[in-house]
Image (cartoon, rainbow, N blue to C red; front, side):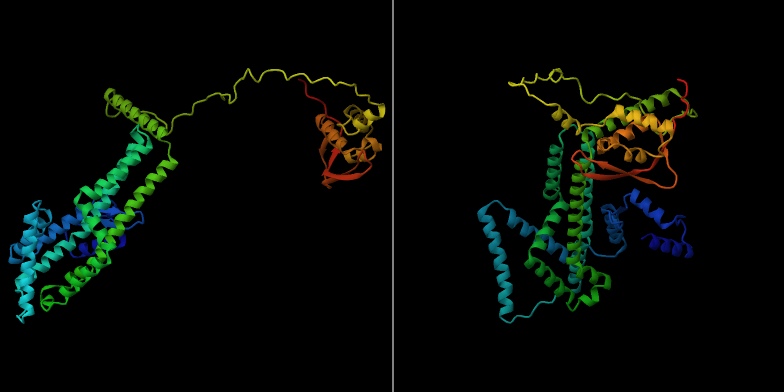
Length: 442
């Protein structure tokens, strides 16, 4: 579209046309969207708005020399009034009389042809006006469908605006949207046109009848003299116009429903209303500031407000019911007699012997007898080489600052002996034992 507009602008300037905008096609299309001459679809395509289509229809009507008063136009009006009155007249007897008059008229025409009567040929003026009326009706279909699409778009914007500003529950607003959609289809001319198109597309018999009548009119002997190529394409595409318009309206309605659903899932209504109130308050303050200042007054203001420095609020609060001592343990009915061996057996499965390990570690560092913790550990007595003692040694050496990363080899092995006599080898990062440096004064 942008390239097409660029090409047309170049052609107009080359032809010497005055008043051609000095803009690129993309910028011009964006202006036309802002002026509501074009719609920008979500797919990126441009379509004419309802107002633009009606304006083009008016231009086409005023620039074509077409007669509006004719026998065909009057007879069409009378036929429409007769069918309308027959379908709407509340008087039972009068409606039956109107139906009987239609039947008698059609029966007389049928009997005349059935008796061998000559088929009456319509006048060229009658055929011309008939084709003009059909073309006018068909050409109005795109504008009608576009009007329905724009109505759904207005409903979408209205509902989203109500979500942001209205204090009613979201469910009530969704019900309002559904009511607006029903009213659009049932109470507006463009909505009723869409409903009629929907009925036509659902009824294969009606669609076939429409196609059959159009083919017959296009094959009429006088059609070649009256209709141009563009008029033929328009009539031939009537069913496609209706189907395309139905698809467009259905897509717009689905997009409206989808956008409302996504909004409900991803937005916090209370937060949006608070933001709206904040923006309105800022706007009111800005108006007050403008009233107190001159036209050239400047105000230093950051792009975003400064963040508030707040203390961390507690997540859990004191619960008096939880701040009670546990119940006392029940006393054993019989005293448990533990022997010394039982106590020793339980102790070997306990934690590291930190006091003894502390002494051995200090002696090793002072005498510089071991280069690494693994050397110290692997040289201990079997009862001090439990796996848990490895953790004790690392804890004490790290606490006292006796470890530093070793160069070269990166791993070292600890050969542990469990209380049950089984062995296990543990691998850790290698670190050298070193004397602690002088401590900094407090």
